[in-house]
Figure 1 (cartoon, rainbow, N blue to C red):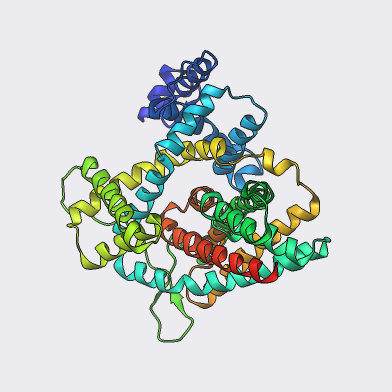
Figure 2: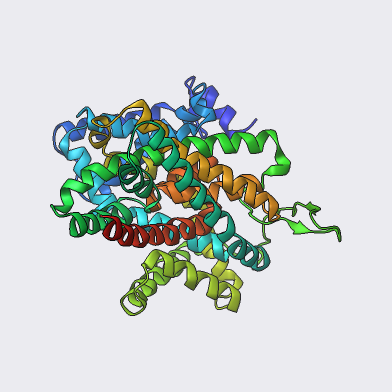
Length: 439
């Protein structure tokens, strides 16, 4: 008899991951009640108490709901439900402040992203990593061109003029998020057109948020496509390995877990955390010298360390062990925090119209479809190539976590970050130049 069966006999109640469901429900209820009495600490402890409990409950629920489970499931529910609850003021201020403290002041989001990037790169095959990095740019470039063309055409068909369609619908979706895209764009627009940057933020955010939601739904649909057509799906691997002399014939690489580099050795999670955070801090130091964002530099540093064999296999294994914990247990809680803090629905509700939503959706779908088709011609797994490409239309690191979570492909995070960061900064620079030129 399994341990889960024993628990079911001892506790005749629903079970979640081998634990009576009553336990996380009761603890989460206690935290929310504490919020009503302003007793949640507005720090990391309080923030984790809020997001972990809700993530444990809403994530599995979303994966079991009809229809929703097919278009993003737990990721979509964990993102949207807290955002709706904040919009309707169902959460008290103390609860929201505790989550904000964790996600923004303590920057838990960047810790999750750094863990996913460093852990997945250090645990990746060198050959497949290099192949993926080289081949990601053609579908990204082609997808961006297609997204701009289709988005402009769709928006203009619904009555938006060229200027409005390009700078207020297409560009904010492709700008790389709110902090990295919308904020610098608002400053560039204010400088070129006059006025205060804050007034432009309110006009740019809705398209970015709607685009991110559509990207999450698209990721869920791509996952379902991969499940129905396994030959299109790399399961988080971008590049096929050639085994035939005839061009265009490829066989998937058999993916097996790497053997433990030191048999019988327990992972040193502290060393894994030090490796991940140390590389990110070093990237932050280099940011002052090279003037590239730290999330981009940590990708470059991780790749160089992997290629040069800087870390012993045991250290790489420790980083992968931390990655495994975060990717398995903390993605849904992170999504709860993102929904509460980074997805302001009040900015979206005022501009909602069928034409606006369809135009935003067209940008994202064109990006995904082009990535799928171009990836297929370049001997990449089409589903995975489309997922990485569509991350360019998400809300920066926030969007990458949500999109890859909906597709259950967190090991694509390094490629997604390249798509988001480099694609976003290119979009912002180009838009800032064009709006000065076109006025």
